[in-house]
Amino acid sequence: MNRLLCVFSTKENAEVTTILSTDAEIATWNSQGLPNDPVSTENGCIVTNSARWPLMIDPQLQGIRWVKNLEGDPGRDLQIVRLDQKDMLTKGKTILIENMGETMEAVLNPVIQRASIKRGKKRYLKLGDSEVELHPDFRLYLHTKLSNPHYPPEIQAECTLVN
Image 1 (cartoon, rainbow, N blue to C red):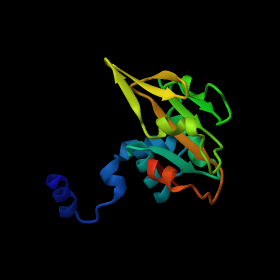
Image 2: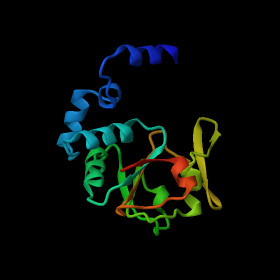
Image 3: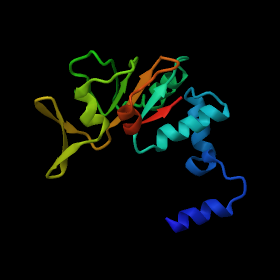
Image 4: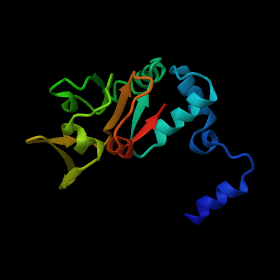
């Protein structure tokens, strides 16, 4: 940890984008539809480097377009779902839950909290009464079109809010 702090403290004009990404990554994101402005680039860095699942506040739908292109590779198996779908978490490696409101269904809590159970070499999530195998490359993106949502503290603590 001390070594990391020394790297940051010795750099003049250290920026989030230069620490968390490369110029090549940013150029790729821009070609995938991420707007070429500093705030969008910083948000892209946060979304791709965050340890928590990103919850994107995106009324103009720019972020969701970018995520669809970013994760659109056939190997990523992007599935776009809505909260009201019954089998939304059994669909693929990368899931984008779009058009969320200000509340989240309780069945999503184990996913949001990453509360997985390890059995042998595999990880499982308990969803309601059943257990679902968790793919090692699983990614979750949460999206809302609301411009000024008010999420409860539990959601704010478990997700990375990106506006």
